[in-house]
Length: 255
Image 1: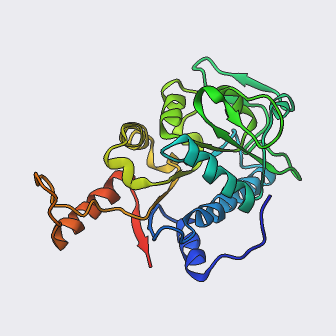
Image 2 (image 1 turned 90 degrees about the vertical axis):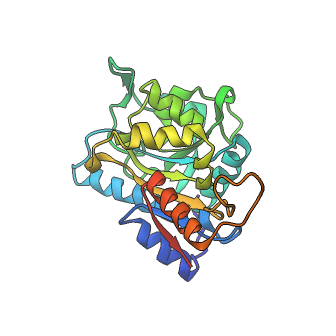
């Protein structure tokens, strides 16, 4: 459940900016980037809930937080659970709603928007491959499809999210918020790159999710193509940052 600890001024400015546009947040380690993501996530959960009450919602929506490794996904999921208006999902929660699957394999819910009904708290799940859905509650693990069915917020590795997109468990247009943690790993993470190049670019602009990319080190700091490590020039670093922005479809935000 959400803690009441307020954001620092720079965190609040960043979170407010991320509500309106895609951001590549460049801040040092331990500066609270995940807290910023939690605030933005709460905004989108609240926004979708308001749309549901107003009758504008038509299908189930999700927020997705991607972290490069399973252990980091667990760590970030714990922070989100602490600071967002969410509760951990468990196996029993999957049986509380009625679901179907369409002919293309996509998971649909007969309950609109984020699965929590009026007065309920959104559910968060941490998905780790064959381990299924990890929960702090003493319950059986959920499989990938069940995790999509019972959760409103999912924390996972890029590979697992890419697998869900490839097998049409979910469409990128069904995602309200996509958080890319350690976004500088787009330089070497094939799944991160494929998600943005193959799926994000192919989604109509009006139906793309908001993207919040987080990193403490967006630049490699070395001269491109050098056989030995050589410091990059200022112009080379500017070019590298521009390339990074293009890959994540974001504008840089920093302090």
